[in-house]
Image 1 (cartoon, helix red, strand yellow):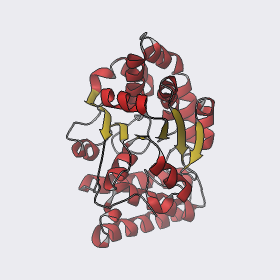
Image 2: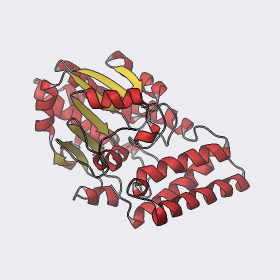
Image 3: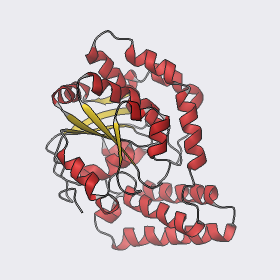
Length: 307
């Protein structure tokens, strides 16, 4: 996905939120914001296709802010709060997902819940996490599923022996657990990939463990800290696993921004909530909708996903 004008505004507003979380020193905040603007300008004026992916600029933004402020994880407190709040929703989530008697319908509901869980994200311009309304949103999540490739994904899941599950945000990983359990119910071995280093409010090993993912899946890291999947911030071990599994589940807008730019060696399912207009437009749908979008034999303009 390539940048739109609205992405520029969001990247800057998110940077300002982040420097405020990272430090109270106004001079340091200004220094960080200045370098972020310089990076954004260089990407827009002189960058190629890779440099015009919003997640690429967002990753560089976060690295700059971490370095200049000396704060390695500005969202640490918000991530803990997200995990705590999401865990309080586990009972209505489990009731919603596990109520059907057959595995096909349980799998469907787990996919819908996982895509809705992507609503737990900070810093997207105009988006506020509706913590008080999440139980209601769970009940109406099916009606807000605008791209529905779940039947295709169910068939792929039944055939897959190994699935790589790319997580997105802390808190959201609580919702992911129910879908990972649904994969296990179908006999599929799941490996969960979280970020090795902090970026935004993305989940790391600690968040996955708090959400209970270690009880139902192996946990690995991407080898770095970047929004979505960008090869220069991934380990060879992770990229090898990505290229060797039978199925990939990619949660969130960052993975939607990055992965379709590359040629994908295996079926890849994007599960997300459209929290901004540019992402919604890239999918030809409206904002605030749930998505389960399966890509098969996808060839992206940037070629193979490798270092």
